[in-house]
Every structure is written in C-alpha cells, then in structure tokens.
Amino acid sequence: MTIRLLPEFVIAFALVFARVGTMIMLLPALGEQAAPARARLAFAVLVALITLPVIRAKLPVSLGNLPVVVTLLITELLIGFTFGLAARFVMSALQTAGVVVSQQIGLSYTMILDPTHADQGQSAVMSSFFMMLGVGLVFAANLHHVALMGIVDSYRSLAPGDLPASGDAAQLALTLASASFSTGIQLSAPFLVFAMVFNIGLGILSRMMPQLQVFFLAMPASVLLGTIILILVLSLMMDGFVTSVGMAFRELFPGLR
Image 1 (tube, rainbow, N blue to C red):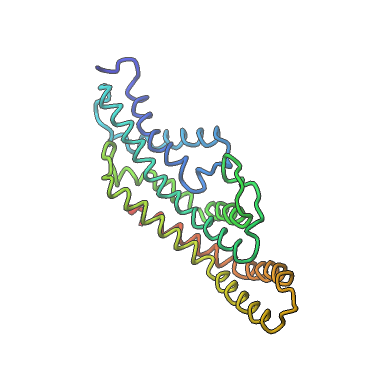
Image 2 (tube, helix red, strand yellow):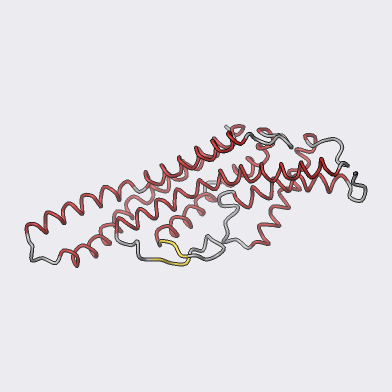
C-alpha cells in the first residue's frame, strides 16, 4: 500500500511534529499546563517547521509506504515521550522541596489551587510557589533555549526510527527521577535541620515547664521562624535548582555539552 494523496513534505512534517510536539508538551517551562493549549500547539507547530529543514536529510528518502510511515510515526511519538517525560522529572524537585518545607514549618494544611496543572488540583502552598518561581527562573536563565536546542540534539542521539532500548529508557528515567528527588531533599535541607532543632527545643521546654501550652506557642513560632529562614535561603535554593536543571539537560542531551 502506498500513499499518493499526501505530498512527502506533509508526511515528513508529521514525523517531525510527532517527536517535537510530544517533547514540547512535556519539557519544563515550555510545556507547563498553565499556558493555553492552543498557544502550546501553535508553538510546537512553529518549532517543527523550523526543525524540519535541519533534519530532513535524516528522514527516509522514500515516504510513500504506508506501513513504514505508520511505524516511524509511532516510533517518533515514543522517542518524544521518552525525552519529554525524563525532562519533566526535573520539575518534580520543586514539588518535593515544597511539600517537605510545608511540613516542617507548619503549612502542610494550607492548600491552594495549583495553576501549573490543567485540572487546577490543590497542592501545598509552598509547592505552588516554588513551581511558579522555578518556571520563571528557567526562562530568566535562558534554559528554555537549551531545551529547544535539545530537541534538535535528540535527532543526533536517536535518528528517526531508532527506538531506544526499553532498559536504556528506563535507566534514564530512573536516573533523572532519583536525581530530582535528591535535589528536592537538598533544597529543603535547611528546613529539616530547623524542624529537628525546633522540635527538640520544644520537647525540652515542655519537660521544664509542664504547665506551658506548647502547642499554642509552637505553631505561630514555627511559621514565623520558617518564613524568616525561607527569606534568607530562597535565593540559594533557586540557584541550586537552576544548576540542577542545567545538569539534567546536559545528561539528557549530551551533544550540548
């Protein structure tokens, strides 16, 4: 069976858009759910049109065989999903840090609508704050340029039709996921230390003064001191996050080193 109605340009664009569009919908900052879906779709089409002339030589010469085209299309979708999902794990570091910080300073029950998700689900207030701040810093540090260059670099790592081995893809995803979790714990380390010292101090105070209502003293003091610590270390936390994003992109797109 052959394709005679569609020109080869349209088929080539569909193959490129399958990978590029999937990656853009998942990459940090570029694929945030807060952005309108039509805007993200239009941006993905534009990037695909720009990428097509660059990698056109790597596409198969003949695109008239329907089974081959369908196989290539599915393969490109899987490759784009692999790269995009692995990069999406980077943003989970801020969610981890936000949850830990909220628990340690007494704001774990403060939930707000999360604007970074399409379903507008609730999340801890610190998680939403860190996510919005992290997205802004990715754009401010021009790391979205690195993500766009990584889309083209993905064709250097995996040519069209070269489906990655399932073991390699799983290993990449696990490596970035574990690195993101470790980064989230490291970002929240000052608050873990604060909570340990604060709770030990409250325990000692409670033993020395049993008649004191420690709970009514602990909650406002924990929020106040935690907020002060957040103001002092926020710049260092975000600097560590931006550094981790750069390292993750270098791991994901080795051709950009």
